[in-house]
Length: 423
Image 1 (cartoon, rainbow, N blue to C red):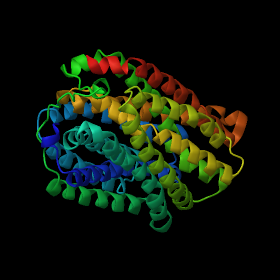
Image 2: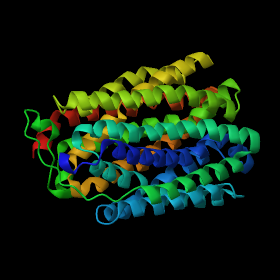
Image 3: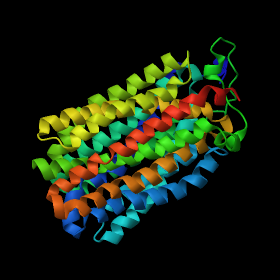
């Protein structure tokens, strides 16, 4: 977007905040099932593998399939229209979960939730790329992606409290209603911007902020994009594997209720996750103007530093050690979010931004949510005869392997990023 065509910064920030709220609610509604997994497990007599399939694999497959036509449409027709329709649908499906009386009902509502949420991230990232010029995009994307961890934290805190006080069904009714209200606000406040063709700034840092052209096919041919997507797959396995089982871990090993675990972990996680995301955005804007490789070096470094924390959290002997290790893990993981999103939007041509975001979302969800939770659950079930309830610790510790593989992939992607931006 040319500077003279840019929206006033205050107005653009307002739109970005609305989008951040939507992605936060999307993640909150998605995560709520994991927060109340223990009471649902006992009510429906489910195994850990059953829970992993319900919270992960089923959602991931449907989300990924739905993302393909939704992102294609978002690159061609009104993104705000698609976004508000999808938000309304996933809000209704969240409420429907509370009406479930059998496992198949939970699964059906989860399918609807996945279809609705498939439209959020591709539309939102494409809109932000047109609301905000490149030199401010890292910070704008930091605000946006902060909505994700904020929503996950809210799911644990608010969802856990509602579960303890009123039962898990009421938690779904309340959060579904909040999402429905947010969809209405988005419908009346978010404008559909003109799809801008960014001009190449004439500066000594031009290579760092170049805008690629050539469509989606050209994007997929770039080595940086391919390694980026591979890294996204690995890190999503680690994040979703840890995330879905986090509340259950605290409940099983330390005797807390879901509400107690969600409130404390949520409050602590809010500070470190939002701080890590914001710092990542500021650092990416500052460092990438000198060398674009920092957009992917920061994610690699963050995941490398998070790995010792992942192991410490999995084998924490006390709740204090667990909270300290989990805080470090969350901080370093979220440090990667804004730089990675900014790298993807710089790599993608204007007419392929929604599909680029959808590709990352599909891979992250299909592989991450589809594999991570069920892998942890399967390891836990498999080792239970030998290690008892400690088997869950080993399942969570195993997530350090895909996390380190993701760090390597982001580092490899950084090696060709500048060249791929110049093409």
